[in-house]
Length: 344
Image 1 (cartoon, rainbow, N blue to C red):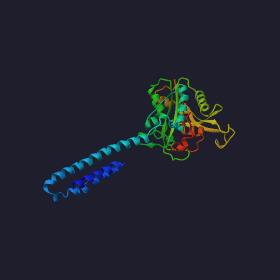
Image 2: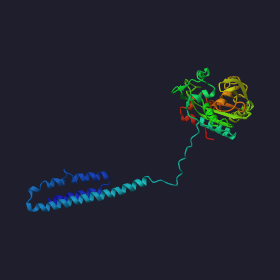
Image 3: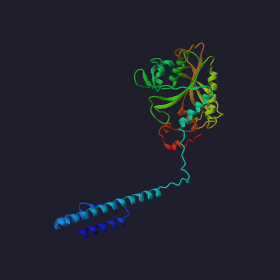
Image 4: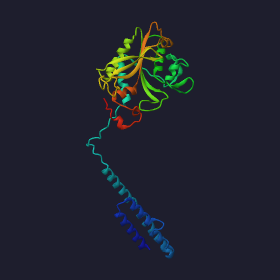
């Protein structure tokens, strides 16, 4: 029995010495030291040997177990070190290799347009003003010469939250709030970019949520010629130095007189084409002189102060500037569309 135990020890140690995989070490440990292993089988026969030999055999069995267990632990640590070394060798990074190029993203066309417009007007002495998108009816309509039940309210089908709260339908409330903060003392010179909301059917040229940029100047001796000169500078900056503008009579409740501004077609130069629908002109924005009632409600004396205001849609400007034919492209986040607009 003693010889059998020593034989099993030698056999186990040789297997452990030859193994190259950590999973095989675990298998050998279970094979020889497990409850169903040969060493256990030998120990089950202890009852067949004389009592005086049992302590000797028991001691030999423990020594064999300890020797195998120790070898298992040593071999495990040895292979563990080798595995780490092999992994480090395989994952070595050559720091002399060139790095991967970082792809720069592009400005969204709407962002590019609004930043270009802001830079232009900031250079002309304007400030950028902002206001809440959830607006009071007072600032969205009443302070802009649109009292309750005014028929012109039908021009802007609105998202009402309560009777007195709605999603703003234009950025003009920012103008009303800013004038109110000035307490009737000019000058006021601001542009107001931001999101606006109207109940509209989404299609190639309409959206229930879009963006606007409005401008406002209030001071003494402001005239329609100041508005025309400002818009002329804007048109040349955005669409080219050879652009011409024309003002056509129009109607807006918060300006009087009111105008629509057209620019000469940048595609055909005014000769007539599919872009301008053969007219030679493209409608761009609306504006006019601030209505005396709006000045009064904001605390300004219309006998002392006058002003002009204008408003445009960022999407409209971007579509004309970049030749985009469907407003929905701005909101679908299609990377193929966005990649066309290179960083400046």
